[in-house]
Image (cartoon, rainbow, N blue to C red; front, side):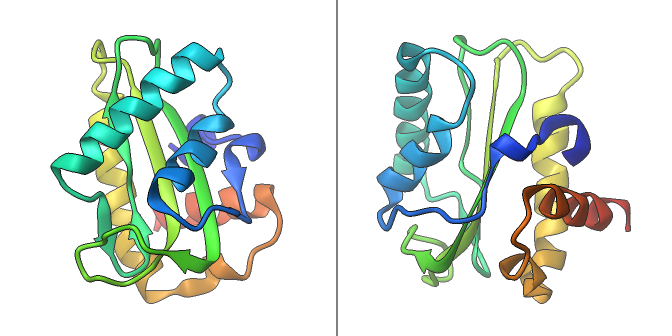
Length: 150
């Protein structure tokens, strides 16, 4: 799944943002579509965060949404070594962000399947903070893929 959805340009190993909304904007910015679509997706993500934080704890957040402006599943991964206050359920700063967005029309349920897989590997990532040391985007993708295969 990670090898299918994640490209090196969709991995940000040094997020510069220090606030929740800015992190969302920085993650959305790398998506390869027009600014008007990016704004819609960003607004949808912010509304989702108002319902409840997607900071699942142990330094990980999975901001996600569905939007009719999208035509497929998109995944962006961002890392902040310092951590960002993301209103996570455990109150701890978040280091790793999995941005997942998709069209509401998803006949293969790729969005839900991907969300489930991210949640699964997040348990492994919470125990092993190796992801904080990797400095190459391709190596980072390989690392995530290896956790998925375990």
